Image (cartoon, rainbow, N blue to C red):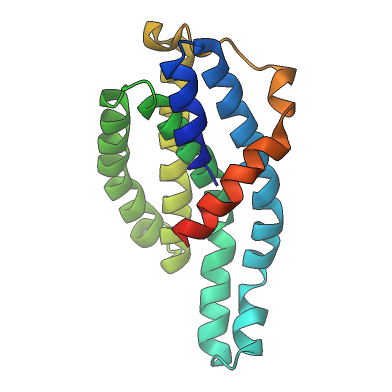
Length: 180
């Protein structure tokens, strides 16, 4: 659904309506976080869903446990997509590459600690993914907030982001279906 930002942010940036980019991003973040709640509920029931479809109960239990530990990743992923598209619309790619590179390097360490040192095994891998995604979100958020590159496009949170949600959804839903 975040791919709708490619269109909305691109149009706003091209029209030199820089402050609108931040509003589009906030709107997308609100919508994606809202959509993530029912997805997380479904995801939390992975074990039951797999058993319903005839999966071996032992495998379903392991997958369900892994999915439960991955739940925070659902929310971080949605936010990360919004942040990336907000920056891409402005041709600001270097911070995204740096953030991803740093996150990848740290992920190796985090994963090793969570899988082997903590004794969590595969659950630790899920926790490591969640930590890494949230770390990436945090770095990009700090960049957007404090970088002079985003001073025109990020003016802080606005109630205006709660307007025109149906317009956003008219583009976001078909975009999501296309990606599927």
